[in-house]
Amino acid sequence: MAEALVLERQGVLSIRNIDLPQELGPDDVRIRIHTVGICGSDVHYYTHGRIGPFVVNDPMVPGHEAAGTVIETGSRVRNLKVGDRVCMEPGIPDPLSRASRMGIYNVDPAVTFWATPPVHGCLMPEVVHPAAFTYRLPDNVSFGEGAMVEPFAIGVQAAVKAAIKPGDTCLVTGCGPIGLMTALAALASGAGVVFITDIAAPKLEIAGRYDGIEPVNVRDENPRDVISRHVGADWGADVVFEASGFAGAYDDVLSCVRPGGTVVFVGMPVEKVPFDIVAAQAREIRMETVFRYANVYERAIALIASGKVDLKPLISGTFAFTQGVAAFERAASADPTDVKLQITMPGATAT
Ligand SMILES: [Zn+2]
Image (cartoon, rainbow, N blue to C red; front, top):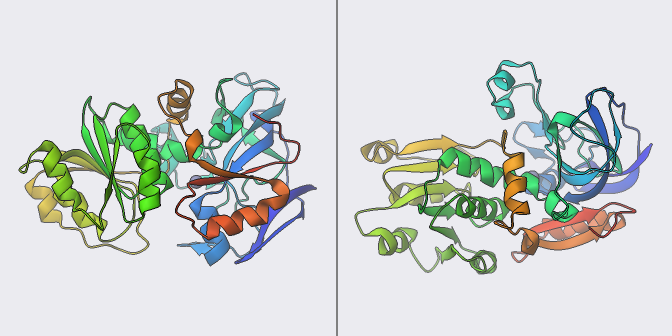
């Protein structure tokens, strides 16, 4: 039995004991959880009880953005040892599947992902996880930053898919946590400048604190005009990342990308959106999609450890586990000055 944060059903969270299998296989490690970030998906399951086809029918432990310490290793584990500080990839594919063998394990139909019903997440004291999806954190990367690797990995996946070239002009539509992560990843991957759009001034203000990220409030300015001023009226951004999922943004994406440029779809619209295929064809736009990430955790950690990406200012609040329900309430209130809220587990030390 372990005391966990449990989403009992839509709108009801509690901290209580829950009996979950925690058997350590030969290729697994046991991890004492230190810090867990609250993701938009965790909040959505709390407030709506479902995301698309995934429905909370039974009590579920939320949380999939975690860092902690290895406290036990399986007999075949060679890459980790007891005492290692780590973060974990929350999706576990079938390693023998066709998708996994192709290196695209994130789209393995058999993947199980923390805190996606009916799979439990990690807001509990200990988890057992495959060592192959557990990554050691360098000493200069805090547990808080370690728990940010998961959302940052989505930005890194987007930058990899974009195949950014040195000095590229980039645009990110949407300044939520994932838009910010994408902008930071693009910048660290060689972009010359990254414009980022939103309608929420406080979110843009946070983004604008980073050198190289230029906030654009679409209430005041048309992003197309901003890009034109930068690259010329007949041209556009080399790469546009759609990170809002907002239907109206898809026209901006098309009007802002240059001929032969790249669009990366990161945001997930809740419904089908109209999209002007001919406008994309007429400029031979290359289009890429992002679903979570594969093979980028080491890259994400390297960018954080090197200092090229500083995620610390984006940790807006840290709650003790006993205040976990309050943390979810605050996340659900969607304060635009909050980027990421995190929960630390009982007994968690400072770093
Ligand atoms: Zn997440």
